[in-house]
Length: 190
Image 1 (cartoon, one colour):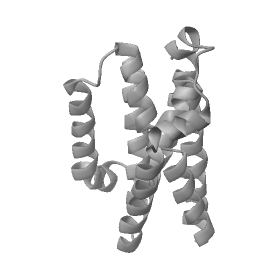
Image 2 (tube, helix red, strand yellow):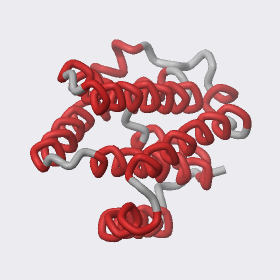
Image 3 (tube, one colour):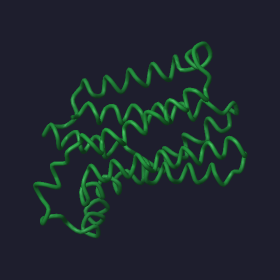
Image 4 (cartoon, one colour):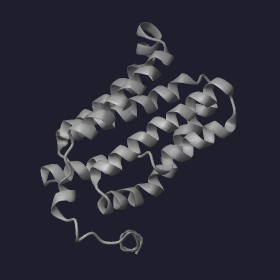
């Protein structure tokens, strides 16, 4: 089951890196990841707390759908060059599209331990391959638009896999003992 979570993380990062590589302007290659990462940094605890309150499966599906919708806004920006689409993409992806804290929390719930070394090695090797060799892949094997389309198919595959296969232990174990959202926010930012 935790392989599905790893696949979700890798598919999201594949689409994110493909989006960064599709625009030839250097200014946007710095601006987009910086803004998305800073928003994701501040909203990750809230998103993780909300995944505790609701359940991991619903939160993961919601975040994957947000990533898919936000990426469509990126394509709108790329086609029509309206800055409002880029800002919608950045805010949607930074605020609600961060899959990493939910996937790592779900991994801990499934395995009853924190993420192991192999999990991070898979992520690191994927980042290294896509980051260092991604331009070779897009130059010799496929265009950047094809890589973007492949990323969309990966996201849709993730949504289907999570919906059909992923079982959430929190729904079955603690339906009446959930703390309120206010208690979660007070606990996170005390």
